Length: 178
Image (tube, rainbow, N blue to C red; front, side, top):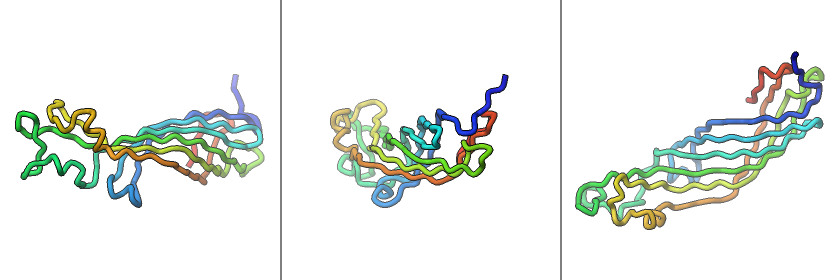
C-alpha cells in the first residue's frame, strides 16, 4: 500500500545538518573557519505556514594567532608545566546556537502544493568560547577554575533568514531544500 502526500498536507520534517562557518566582522578577529553539527524540527501546516526550531553545536581548532596566553609563555613561546617542561596545551573553539523559525511555502504547482519557494525568518541565542585543554593537568595557571578566566565566553542574539526551494515529492521518497 502506498502512502500519498495529499494536495496540501501537514508535514513534520526532521533535519540533521552539517555547517561550515566562515566568520566575519569582530568574530573573524578570533576565529578562522569552524564546523557545526545540529538538527531541527520543521512543521508545515495545511495553509503552508512553516514553524520550527533548530540547534547546532560548533567546534574548531583553527584560531587566529592571539595574545590569549602570552602572560604564561616563556622566552621561546612555550607554556611550562609545574616541573618546568613544555606543556601540551590545545586551544579550540566551542559553542552552540538555538533558533526558533517561522516562514511560508509558496507553491509553484497546483499538483504538489508541498513544494515551492520557502521563505524563513528566525531568531534565538548563540554562544561561543575558547576551549583550553591541558593534556596532563599539570599547568598550575591553567587548572579548570583558572582556565575559565581565559575563555572569553560570548553570547548574544542571533537572527537568520532563508529563501530557497523546498521539494517534497508526492511519494515521500525525494525530499530536499536548497
